[in-house]
Length: 141
Image (tube, rainbow, N blue to C red; front, side):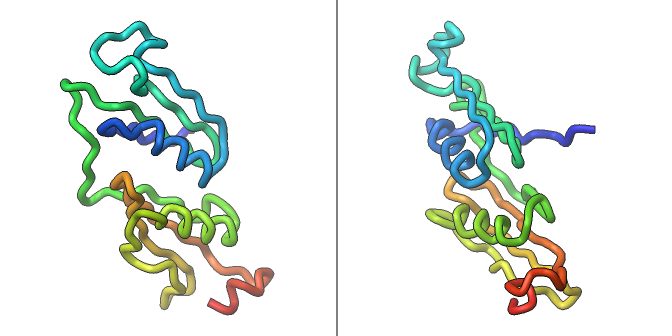
């Protein structure tokens, strides 16, 4: 069963956000402008619909006057175990650039590692993984 996909209404930064997420997570990015959709309720070059499909799925658009711009409290996007630990550590570092590390990625008393980072678009990500004996880098944390 497919998981829900976050859809962000951003204030003129949808292209920038989706391009960042593609650099971080990889995947296929499809962007359509207001002009592409023959829409007149926003600037022609603005993103009417953007979609990243891959290891992490995200959609975004540039908000119109009718849309509420994305803001979040009490919600985070959990990427627990979604990739190998090395990849998850790379994602955490990349999302923190221009953003804010809310809780450093670290080993927890229960044995797993996780952390929280709010990216520069205001999305809070929870990234973590379980440890295995096979990965020497994980034993060092």
